[in-house]
Image (tube, rainbow, N blue to C red; front, top):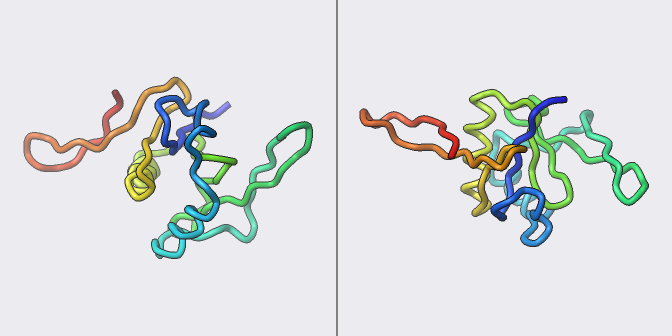
Length: 120
């Protein structure tokens, strides 16, 4: 099972429904970021209240790697570039990036001015 990262507005990604990221917000993000698009082919099927619900993937630069699920954006098995994009998405949505184990991902400046992804 892959490790997931979650873009949420809460301190714990399991509580995301208390301050959800709406589909309307994702639609707006996609229309304002030319590198993002709803996938026409790729999706994730998830069980919800006993029914299977299909969630369309979000493409980044033509590759399906994120999806909106109820109240958050999820990325499974993210590489460093995808984590960087998730941090950008989170900033645009006034949100944070959290791992399955609750660690928070941040972008920090190094001593020489470059940026580095860290977990806290």
